[in-house]
Amino acid sequence: MIRTEDLTRSFRRLVAVDRLTLEVAEGEVFGFLGPNGAGKTTTVRMLTALIAPTSGRAMVGGFQLGEDDSRIRRAVGILTEVPGMYDNLSAEYNLRIYARLYEVPNPDAQVEKYLRLLGLWERRADPAATFSKGMKQKLAIARAVLHEPRVLFLDEPTASLDPESAHVVHEFIAGLRRAGRTIFLCTHNLDEADRLCDRIGVFKTRLLAVDTPARLRTEFFGRRVVFHLNRADPGLAAAVRQMPFVRDAQAVENKLVLALDNPDEHNPELVRFLVGQGVDIRFVGELRRSLEDVYLQLVKAA
Image (cartoon, rainbow, N blue to C red; front, top):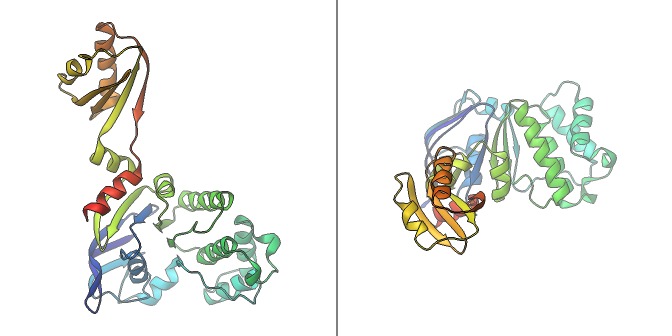
């Protein structure tokens, strides 16, 4: 649904996006993560045909960037980092304006549908200027999806939202995903990316890594299993370390922490070995590294 090849954008002497090559499948929620100034917004502006790339190519929704720009703009929805609204107009009238611009069939029904879904229907007659920043954010999301775009670009969709409103937006995004929409999600909220995204790309001018959150954690830190024991003999870690599938073993207080490539396959053999050594196992858990750990390591290295 989105495909780029060496997509580049320079501003005078500054390279904002450096040879981005990426593919996002139809129906995928793709998280685009990076620090401020990394080039994420510039990437979104290129892919939505708001600015032209310096070099490289891209296809969005089956349309060629640079040749089918007007068709791309009609086919996508976009939530910008700073959503602008007509503050003196009501929420309902704001959306009606955009419904007409996009030639939305039955605009009144569409406006009501998304105001209700995002919890704004009771405030539909109020001027946008009276809305909180979080409510304006939800109104901007409604505007982005009003014309039922196949591809949706969301730049920090839960910025300034309280936890309850953020949950509404998360459920809304999950519903769009179930409906088969392709979502390109820029966010600084790593927990949000971990829960919502099929894959993520970590970006700082150039693409640093792309994969599922789970595989990125495994690639950078492996999987660590923690055996909680009644008593950990000092020599136990050394004995376990001799097993061919154990990458590392450390005894920490009454815990045995093991780095394994495939815990699901090897845990039973480890349990049998430890019981055979007379070890009492209280329970077994997994030590999970966060997506934040992966992100910080990648950005620091870049």
